[in-house]
Length: 378
Figure (tube, rainbow, N blue to C red):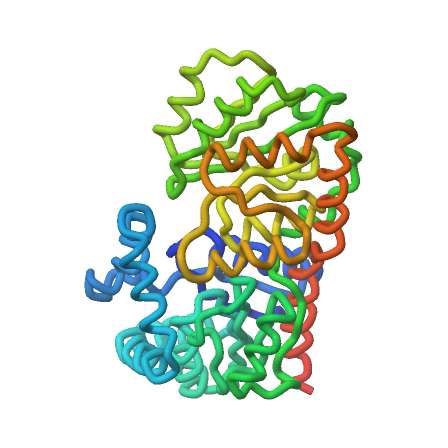
């Protein structure tokens, strides 16, 4: 009989859903005929009040238009007493939604990649007609919000030693905390082609240093950075990915380029692109940072959201895997330093990225969660 897994996530930021999709893909690939996986966001339940569903829909506007407000809210709610109050309120609001999900899907285990759902999922699991373990996958790298840690969870998967210590300091049982790394899609671990082969398949030049610039609807500097690099005189091939940001995509396509520049909007082969590039320029989101590290790809981080993304910057810089270079000028300055002389700086950061990258994290989490359902039956 197939094991059923319910993976809870949210679209408040890109990382939570990408982590959920990575776990789903790892479960399906590792246990293809033995599991069914459902990913859902409880916030999208139409029965919820609009103000609750706005947690997702309003997130992007807040972090772009008023990051100071976001930072104040993040800091204020990080106090344990306030964090518990938030959990209690969220549990009350989401109780019917989570209970209905558990009763309908009858999962053998729940995994959440968004912390606000943890306590509500635990209550729904307790109310089920069979034991349903609840597991948390933390999707930030350093100094994460206290709401991630709940003593009622069965397993908590953490991405770094910093977060592992924080989980234990918060009172979690050492046996329930596992240092796996942050889950990235199995494509990152499974790619075996060398860089030249990948570039040829992508239609890129194979013999020139390649910079990958990745943006989204929550970043505004992608086009400016690409233009500066293009006019810098550096021996570079530039790959600019605008994601779902149509304005940026239009700006990129309207530009007359002096060097070799490849422009993309939304892509489904980012793992392939990362493995084909020499370095990446991006915002300090937890998932894209982790994906880059999984490829051994050094990072130039030009923007960071107050709160958790500042910790992501610190993790990258402290481990020598990249640089904090705010704004287009900062990104250009670091690119100059990395490409000077014999590329020794670039190579040094690439080796450091390889050292801290954990491309198999999703597989490790999938194995432990699947084994958990077997143990509970045994």
